[in-house]
Image (tube, rainbow, N blue to C red):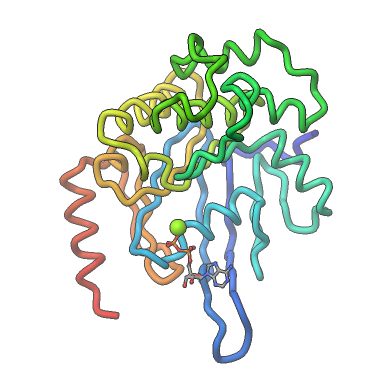
Length: 250
Ligand code: ADP
Ligand code: MG
């Protein structure tokens, strides 16, 4: 796919609103949000439950369409793309991991990782699949099924699957939410290394102050609006900001 313009932003949101329902019962999950996620940066998105974090990620990743406003990925505006073109862009340029790993239980780790290549009708090369598993430290588990792996290992297989197509942006919706602290640390260290060594762009929703401190920037959402941003966060500064967010009366 050709890029329409050269854009240093991996993802750009311009005045994005996403409303659910209509009339007086309408909920604005996102309310006029504008933000640039720079290429090669790691951003954490934080905010209370229901503040619009998942909706922000879904809109930024082309999994959901804003009610108004525009989203561009690598300079390509998603608005106006037909469903097939949007699917192709998602497949080629975007990786997504969730709190629940969403691996197919009947497939081995290697077969799970090969899946996006199959869906793209690319012949999965054994070498690409093994390289992806090696990047997450699980080459020796290639033949194991998800039930034979720990939660942290399953999430690392999901990361290998998200990255095997070499996406421009990796989105994670609470990717460490179900992991204990040592498995979380391992996943977060991988994300940090990919950003630092390979220029990967990562956007991650998290509730966890320590997880957020791995990022370059932290965005704070309240009621569908960005209410603040912190650069070079430390756990102390994130905790302080979250405490103040939660003190805001509803
Ligand atoms: P978060 O991830 O921060 O918890 P969400 O983005 O999931 O928040 O939700 C933001 C708001 O939008 C909430 O009020 C939620 O109830 C509403 N919402 C999200 N998805 C839907 C949907 N598919 N239908 C109706 N309301 C929704
Ligand atoms: Mg959510």
